[in-house]
Length: 307
Image (cartoon, rainbow, N blue to C red; front, side):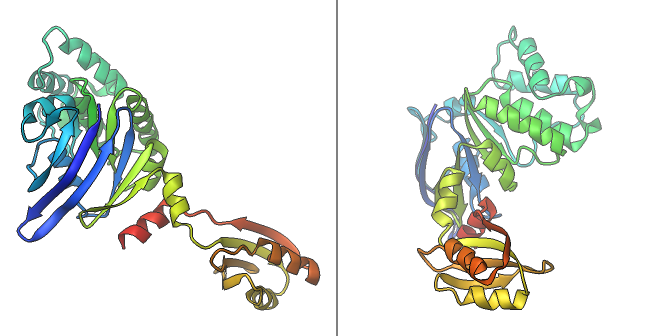
């Protein structure tokens, strides 16, 4: 099932939390939704789930609109908000039975759905405990289970790995990737490595506007700009720095703190310094110990777009 967001705006007084954004997410995509605090991520997700009304614009799930078919949309979406909606005094199994009934799962199917969610979310050891007895990580798993209990076509997960340990994060990543084979998934997270490992595509929102849309490789390549090299040369550092700075293709040379003879070399726009650095070492009979390109990280792209 596809999600189409058209000219969506949400105002609080004069402040636009979401400012005329449009995008489409196709069936089977796992899309990372990134942005700094206050950028409009949670507001957008609340509008898509019909938890909140927009000031203008529309969201459509196939032919259903948030304005005319909110109940139909709610049935088709599983939602894990940032603040996990749990009744802490309920046992895990009873809570999942309760949420299944609310979501309209038929009575005959409820036991099977509970068993499947307990298995998929790794809750078997804790299933007979009250939720208030669980660790934060296991509470998060219960939140995931309630989002999926009615087998929705779309999952919207706001910070789904909050409070999980590294092993649990790997398990949830795998679960989300597996779910993406059969469902449409929107995943919001501040852990950029998690988004990169899990998502097919990334949307970045800043100050209520979409500022980037593409795969992680696409976003990095668009942001790379000038070549940045990391080099290590076995020679007097002051001589190396002066000589490299004098190369025609080099714009900037910076010594790497605490690493004698190591430098970052930034090339001029549309130029590469690799060959000139190599030839310089041959000419001066210096040992070139390392020369590697510094790949633009997703964190660098995020900072560049949201500062």
